[in-house]
Length: 241
Ligand code: GLP
Image (cartoon, rainbow, N blue to C red; front, side, top):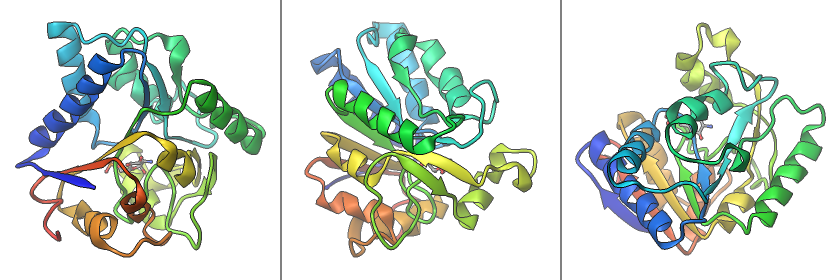
């Protein structure tokens, strides 16, 4: 595990953008695993800037998002489909037919999970997975549990996650209770992982991820077993390291 300490959110985003841009420079047809939430927005903004200024090319890139709320229509502004359109997909030269987000509207979510896993496999696996981290150390929507969930699956969100994500909704009651998420094994199969964290609310989760016991009670701790992980933290998120 490599840890990059940065002063602030912009520094974190810049370091992450360098890693993603370097990946695309070396392998233009990379498969990227992407995350939502407020953490990666600065990274996406910087990638857009690099695309606009020096022509970072996304035309051969394939993307797979980590997760989506169950029952959430892609046109709904609170959906992760919509978030990705707004923050990245529509702003660089990605091919829309190669940008994937799990279908939270699928009637059979287990079948949708299998279909998503198979699509990742056929794309050659994820070259670089971008992750944020929940305050309870979740990655994707893999909540603290008694076991590590392997592949893409339906999840019941923790109350803590519902409270944390309520800021994106009008009322806490509007936050969906279920999501579909890549599993821990999917994430561990990515060739490289970059985990981003900023702000004091993430300090304890970062401590658990980086130096706590490897346990499904802190899902991000599994990353200690991955052979190529870079954790990029700002000063506040690094407070407990
Ligand atoms: C959500 C997402 C995660 C994300 C986390 C942190 O629950 N499913 O992928 O990492 O929230 O969000 P934020 O970056 O807004 O703190």
